[in-house]
Amino acid sequence: MRALRFDGKSLRLETAHPEPAAAPGEAVIRLRRAGVSELDLQIASGGGRSRLLGTLGHQFVGVVESMNLPSDAPPSLQQRRALKGRRVVASPTLVCGHCDMCRSGLSVHCRSRQVLGVRGRDGCFADLVAVPLANLYRVPDSIDDDQAVLAAPLACALHATHMIRTEGKSYITVLGDTLLGLLTAQTLTRLNASVRLLGSRPDRLRLCERWGVKHRPVEEAGRRQDQDAVIDCTGTSAGLRLAMQHVRPRGTIVLKSASATAPFPPGAPFPETPDAAWGAPVDLTPIVSNEVNVVGSRDGSIPDALALLERAEVDTAGLITRRFKLDEAIAALRTAAEPDQLKVVIDP
Image 1: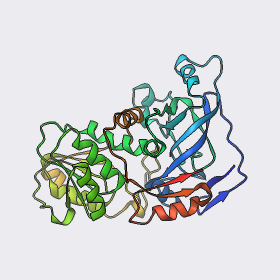
Image 2 (image 1 turned 120 degrees about the vertical axis):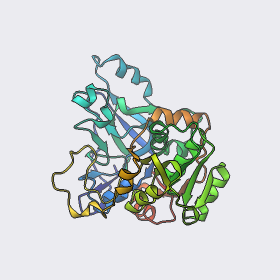
Image 3 (image 1 turned 180 degrees about the horizontal axis):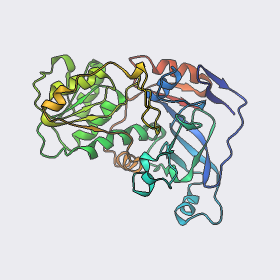
Image 4 (image 1 turned 45 degrees about the vertical axis):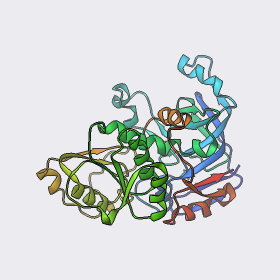
């Protein structure tokens, strides 16, 4: 089979890579569509947030081709037998279920978690990928592949609505017209019509116009420290500084995007000696003096995202900007790094 592999230094498309075997409790998925994410680009560029040696990719929709389901599997897994031959998407984070985090209901922060195509597990930029059945979710028939491949970033955007109370707040700002920023603004606007997005690209602000989302060029917005909540989707030091200029005293800043230069692989402990690539220093005095709450927000619920898509409560039209075949996967990643691209997808 074909697979886009990363050896720690460079990418290569293997055309005769061994097919994955499903371990007990796992399924083998045949790819229908995969999305290139910012994290994929960071890994492929040699960024410090992952030590992946293997197949890239963690956002996909595919069909369950086979599964390894032992007869003594728990009922929760036995119910997954109905996924055979169905379209599915996956939660990319694989957890152990036994550590203190998993036992306390914080499995998303599992001490030994793996992440498809990021850390410890081969990803989905291949004809076939093996995934635990517990991580799979059936895609309703009313959701097409272009919508389904956006389920993971939409889940991430939705998670911001769970981190802050939006009802009754007069001023909420989303920073960044990235895919995540656009989806976050759209989902937050469902709950509070005062939400606005600050961006720099006219074509993306026109998407907000179509969706009925308030928007302004970032350089035109006054920095009066009057916003109840600011959701930073830039993943940059400059974005955090800008958020501090907009948020009111005792307001909330939600950080949605991890810095591209931070050397912290997902699931790894905080390093004792962070290297110089950690990024530019940020003066946090305004957070202390204004008593600002800063909240980190990562992945969200895939079922919640699928439910939103099924109810047609989010508009994804126009978010996919380029398409490539799997044989063109390296070119797909190069194109996805261009500033005018929102979402690049790979078809088998």
